[in-house]
Image (tube, rainbow, N blue to C red; front, side, top):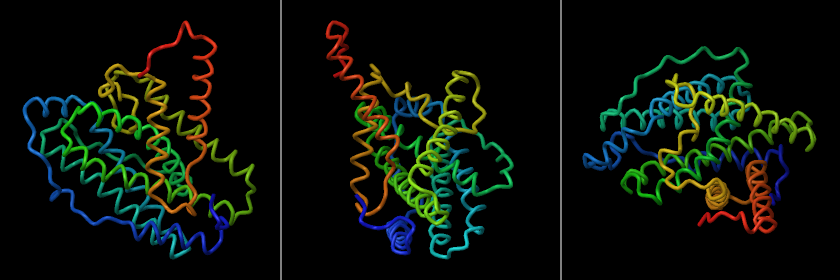
Amino acid sequence: MSRIEAGSETHKSLFCRQFIATHQVFDPETLPWPELTAEELDRLRTIPFWQEVYHTERRAGAIVDAFAPQITDPVVREAVVLQGLEEARHAKLIRTMIDRYGIDATEQPLEQFPADLETAFIDFGFGECLDAFLGFGAFKNARQSQFLPEKLFEIFDLLMFEETRHIVFFINYMAWREHRRGLGSMRRALKSTRYYGRALKRLLAMVRRGHQPNDGRDFAVTQANVFLDRFSFRQFVEDCYRENARRMQEFDPDLMQPRLLPAMADLALRGMRLWDRSRPHLRADVR
């Protein structure tokens, strides 16, 4: 439990300065990209969403860069500018991988952003929180299955760490922002739920598209079945929940962390355990 009052100058200084201090310096083109066998190349190229990943990272960097000049607080603006740099570097990393390994992915034009850039930034932030929480589970499963060489997962882990930093920064930014506007805890919770609902709606829209040709405008883990052999929904939720907890341990306990999605996952897992106990003859082996 944080000992710092949300919305205070101390809180602002903590979440911004720690974000800046944990920035990693690297050039995607000089990372230790491994040489892949023909079989490993085929696996990498069968993953269907690299074009979406690339587009989403480009779009993320553009949204953050466009919103940053509107921030009046210089400390917060400095941190958001750095986030924009990191999002753009994520896009460069994916582009480097696409070019290096001959992946079929074309660059799609960015759509026009709405006039209300702050709302676009907040929508992006909650979407990133949802995607990251689900991505934790998919990443763990794919890594354990050795779907790709470990050297590639070590490079992807750079992105996972930065995405985790981004969502911790965003959650603290929102707490700071809403406290400054005088919103109480109930109104803040309702507002977060509404934005998560919007993010989930976009995710479900992608699910409904199924195997239709993708327009490259969204990325989540809706096609994670490429990785997940013998997929178990319960195991996936457990992986998301546990990996989220593990990754959040790397951050200062005085920083706020996402709570809604872990709480929902915990509730779902409790419900599934209760179902197992009440219906032992229907229990599925998820181990």
